[in-house]
Length: 385
Image (cartoon, rainbow, N blue to C red; front, side, top):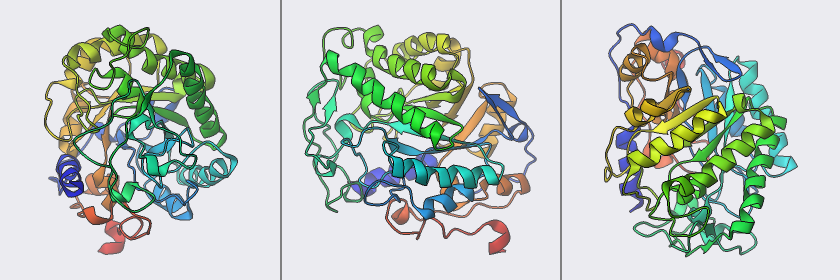
């Protein structure tokens, strides 16, 4: 059910409080590609469905991101590169001039506060509810296999109702260059909108992950079958984006274990290592790994697998406390730590950690929605004191 999924995500991401021990490593600068972060706190990309009916960022989003500019890096939410594949109903896009202009207001506001911000560029693939398509376009994927096991939540569907995911059609090999081109254009548009870089969304059961994992990829040919072939699409998208805007402004997010959107693989360790080995050649700004499974179905040492092969900058997320992040950075395991839910209810999360101020609790019921309630109404510690 919707609440089950929401509760599970909440339990993984939510941090209630922390001990006021002095943080050191988390407050040191770090270089990610072209930029130097003022601290190691990264705000995770968080879908909040606050864009307008045309997937244009709103004034509320300008305030939301600017209020969190004390993070070393903000990664803005999953943002459509393809207008016909809309996963969340009201997520923002980066495929037209109105969206670019509206995002520029966001990036200007973040930069005015001394922040850095990347945009996560995203194609939903089979995770786009059919009701969300403006043109009646059938969803696409690696294979013609529908997501089963859960439905698209009502808050992710433009008709306001829970929807079953429909079967996608398998992309033809000959269509893949045009899909890659939408990511490249999205990245160029993001730079035009003032973003400091982009994060390619290769996680959580969206299109790149659908090619990567064997549960959703039953195709033959150069993009199916072997682990090497299943890595190909993610590598080609990432390499093309890196070539277009500079590899030192590109990150990639992966989720080797996450079974969200009906994703599994029989050998996530081999899959992770194979991708990481090939990513070494791209000299990315960073690799962002999600270390767990929303539903606890698959388990493994994702960070260990990654670090055993990948030579570049690594950040991780899912359920880190500030203390665990401090230890991971101090021990050289991670270069930065990504936090999700704490940033929802604590715009001043970094300051609270630094000063040992308890964290405000978030309201799960307003994580997704159309209003500023639960979006821009969480006070900072100074205004709530």
